[in-house]
Image (cartoon, rainbow, N blue to C red; front, top):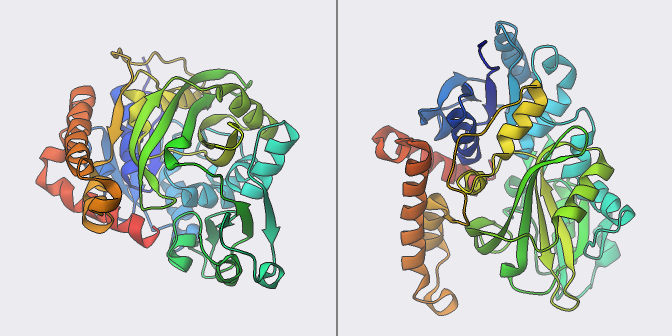
Length: 398
């Protein structure tokens, strides 16, 4: 049997680690590309490839990656682990597609998924619920608007920088996904940083009403695999990544998710986030992430191999996933637990039961990953600096 094409995951972070584990466990060679070794590069499933930092220069990154790709006997498949990677690969699509395949349509379609203006427009066309929102181009237009019930968001959280690199919303404003408080002031800050700006209704209800539909779609629009999950805590608060995430039975979100992605012409992996509005019971679309993410292996450990299916679509190979004991599972972020307890935890707000639940859950997640993947990452002292750097990069917006 011929060698399977290499999967190239970039940049190196905890989402890249999840990708390396799922693909590597299925017998696919994985290369993790980045300027420094991070957690994924220290996995037993991955080989590290040093690359220029795409945040500093997408051109140098693309040139180096193409030079490596030209030497490969088979066309590798590119998997972005951050929106910044998607943006860089879209910018240099013509050069990269000479040597690489992508597990999603390109060019152009991917930007319709990550840009909330285009995402929400597509959702309204096909009858998927969205929060009330509108683009703001002048902060003076909403000066004096009451803060209660409104958020300011960037339509996209990454943009090309004038120096040839990539600039992030978190670098510019210190916020992860949105800004609550005075809408006028927040809009001024986001617009001044050069990001397209959205005024959006804050969907009422606790964050436990956040539900994600994680799906892998084929080129012909078929559902290849999916699972649903619910956030139970998040970090940073508010508008952060999942801290405790648990698989659940689909509450009826698969059909509208697929309808939306087909409308956009998208195929590949995507996690699409909704929030249930307590006033009406309707789930409203918040976000869509067409790249690997932190808790992707919650699905893998439950028998859902979304990334493997996308790899098969990109290469034309029909691959059987490794056997698994599929059942509902809970995922607790080891990195997020450490950061949450040292930075965010307040006994009166979160309760005394949360710290032991987080610590036990984090250990359970690490042991579950060991049991599923036999990857000794957490047992290697050399891996911990990479894990610390991954945590620091999140806090810096990188």
